[in-house]
Length: 177
Image (cartoon, rainbow, N blue to C red; front, side, top):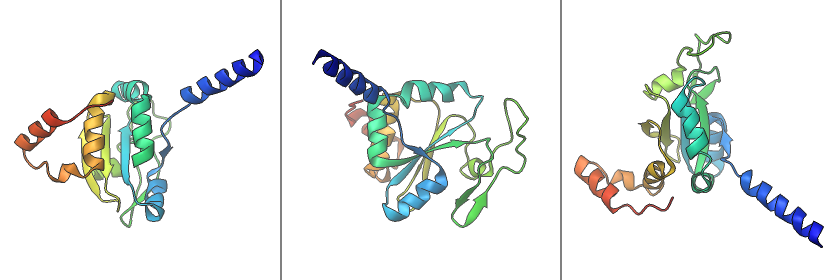
């Protein structure tokens, strides 16, 4: 009996620790939207970016962030200097100057350029129909990311149209992460 209990505890701890964000490619997320419309959350990173690695380690490993993203968004992990091909709004974006042998920085992917991403990490939000909502640059802790995740998901961002409205929204926001 004790061995069965020990086995059950080990499996439970393993399952809790194994919880992670269901990352997909942009093409997969756009295809999934056609079957079940949900907003898209995109993590735009580079391989050399220290704050990007911290975002993975500290924020994308947080159980509240994981649970919220998996439930409410299609989550996309996108290397802004990679060579993946993305078809978005009838145009295929590539990275024609990508150099696979190059260490460190590489050329920027045309999709990152089209989204006007100039800093890493940046998180980008897309509507249920795939249209771009907003790119938010910079590292965020779980609670700093929470306000954006919930504001975009609930469509409250449509009401926050001035700096004063943003200040009030932040002041009134109830953090739970």
